[in-house]
Image (cartoon, rainbow, N blue to C red; front, side, top):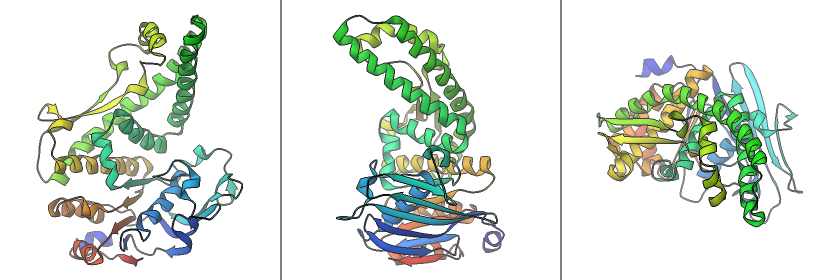
Length: 370
């Protein structure tokens, strides 16, 4: 494996990061000079916060907190994160700043974005954290958020359709709620909303159908790799638009929507379904199987970004050794460290455990003991 790893050429990587007044960091700078970086230390010392700072530079926001104010160090005002990325021979300096007046600024190479969405996809990244198991056990909105985060990195047009669709959906739902007061629905206005939902929703459904057809076989393959055996996992894309046109769905559900005061049909109800030996996955699966599926989904996301971008994204693994058994850990590390040419950040509470799990793979790594 050592000879194979020596041939891996890292194309995209984070070379350094500075964090100022971000979560528990007052003013710290870290430099990264290896493909694999272990971040070790006791709970509460800031391992996950450093991971979140890296995520922020790639997605313009925190992975864990919706409000930027929640990321400011206690009793401070504002924060600043700055990172130096290298893509091939190109250097990219990215800065995320929350000003004292509460205004957020985000820039790449000194150019401030007028719309943060323009940054998405420039620095591809995949993150896996313990709470991600909600992707398997939680409601459909968690799985839609997962595929939308991936597809927005791949397709700027998809992101624009998604933004527009969600805006119109919010407006339509707001109007449906207002009908309860007037008791007089304006069907022409509803039709105008419906036309916009259809225009953007059909494009979203088309892209989801195409990209999920490419992604789902990888999910099955990675599940077998992590689990170490074939458990007859089957995944599928579930959408109301598969069997009926979107205009017909909206028209058919209009009276119901008016009564319930919300839009009950559309791509905002899509889901990913999973089965084990033709039985629903969620009620049948063990804890180990759920974790295997979580990692399979995330690694399929990683592989798709790699294939479509032409280079491996950054991979963040937070506290994975606490959540997987020994065999699954080894199956995971053999792939992400041995066959993946991308940069990997791995956090662990026990430095000896990190060393033991990575040393025998014959891989050079950098260890940050924070």
